[in-house]
Amino acid sequence: MRSINKIDIELGEQEIPISVYSVVEKDVGFKQFSKCCEDSVAYKKSCKSCNKELESSDIFKGIELNDEIKKVETEKLKVDSYFKILGICDFDFENGFIPNGNSYYFGFQKDKSKRKEERNILKFSYIRESLRESGKKFIGLISLRGKEQLVLIVPYFDVLLGVGINFFENVRDIKEIVGKVDLDNIVVKDIAKKICEKEVIYLKDVANKRNELIEEMILDEKDEKDEKVEKESNDIEVFANGI
Image (cartoon, rainbow, N blue to C red; front, side, top):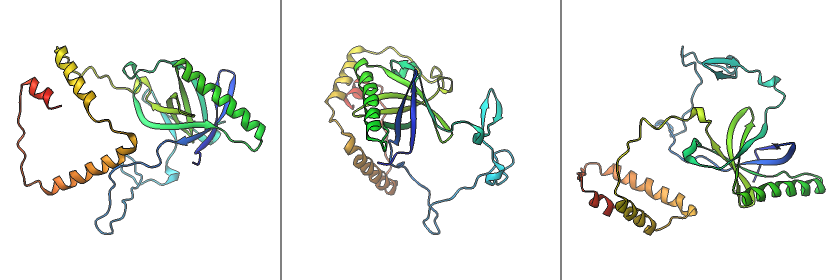
């Protein structure tokens, strides 16, 4: 596996050399193709305000802070890549941490010097196993090729896994979309029991399941003439039994 970057984790006064790897080999999803040649569709860069088509020379890098755009001369920055540990936390999705889908593997950094490489492995392994023993997680700020990302760092087999998370101020408040009702605890336990009785799916089988689902959806699309009548029911027992 080829690394996408080499960088040092800044942890306190220590720097640990690591290699960064992409977790996902390629994105999976529907693509757009042209009807004329069945080729992929290309997109041109344009300004949202005036719709002017832009060349590379018409574009600058910047950051939006408090509704003001500040231009950033990236070539003048001392470092384009960095990795800083911001702190230690107990991970909880319900305390403001929302995964954004970007994840990385972190492994020890190889070196031409065998002695130096062994030292890198030792330091990296101590950090990984200490996190595993403590049950804690690191929150880190990583910048790769000028793109900054907040990551939650957890032990994962023989490597560290950096799960991309959003900054707290960027996470939308869910209060407006959540409705609260009184639930019957017996029904909750009954549904939970049914969920536990379901057949477990293994990660290695997910891709095949996804492909089967897509094929079924395509077949259903062809049979749209057969109308389906949806039956509504207010009977919660019928709902629970259908899980």
